[in-house]
Length: 472
Image (cartoon, rainbow, N blue to C red):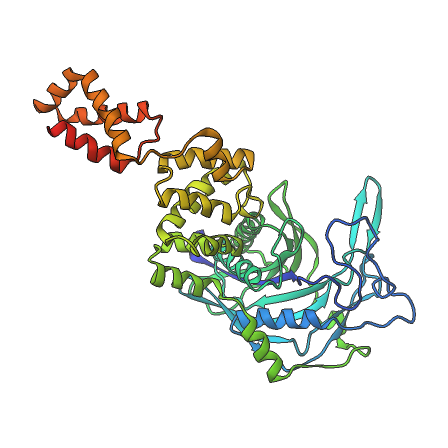
């Protein structure tokens, strides 16, 4: 059988670190990059006699996420103990939500396809093992950090669909502010459950879980490899073993870490040290009212109200920081000029420099000032590009650069007329050729005007005067 005769079935368990200054059950800081074991309370270290205290802001963040994913909010949820041993898990168990998660039955659309979100539950993260040569050290800074585990149903059928799902989910999380989505820092990572079955079959195959994928590229590589691996096993007459896998980035292949556990292996039971979580309708309504305009809504508004084409609207709304920048521009300028100078001019320079918009040396208000000068004909579009280059390199404002370099556009019709008259008198031979039918020479005269004025002549005024003089 060929690969096209098989169908992949994929479900995801996405771990999104909750944007909160403190941990889920303690007041320890969640700041990234601190010295090892400097953000650890007695609760995080599981010292005898300590008890967890629930951080209700994390509850609100989970509700915000659920509402943004059109999900049901469970008004009566509670926490459970998941028992397993890791060296970097001080308690010997993880506090999570197994039986009654805080969010159920959400959805994300990728194109026209609906991907179901079965549940979102809150849980505490483990610490981190730091390996150095022959020794391993434990860093508990991350222990107790709040995670949202966002579990999709097995509705995904390819690595491409998974990539789109992850991009869409990260986009929504960033918009509502419940997770920064920074995969490089581990704020967003996922486990992928992958199985294959013959096309047309409704039965699920044996699934393998690929753990801790922390970039879109690695997610795609890992899933593609695993799909092919399982197909080859089945086509050779073998059976796929239900394993937990790791993805070796260097070899670009999955490796068995352990045999897959079942829920019974974790001996779940209700967490005795925490009360049930009760959420009122008023609280849910309050959080819903505070939600920002979501990316799909914003995209449709740009298309329908501002006449932005679909491609540009998709680009602008792809990240909240880009959309926020654009919103600042359109406070003072029309969408058309704002789109061009953001997505073409500024993005071109940012991409060349290898930086994103949050690190842009030109803030939205500064670019808006440059657009002011274009709109009121203080500078031409050509000069404005040079000014933008200087702004990008020096950090100076458009007004400073225009003043220092004398770049203000010449708009006075009399002054431009004198310059053009001098050009015509100097090039009488070209004037005669133009009048005899060589109309392409018009470009020569435009070029001379721009040369004489160092590009500062207003193009509309210059063309008007030049046409009048050449027709005399």
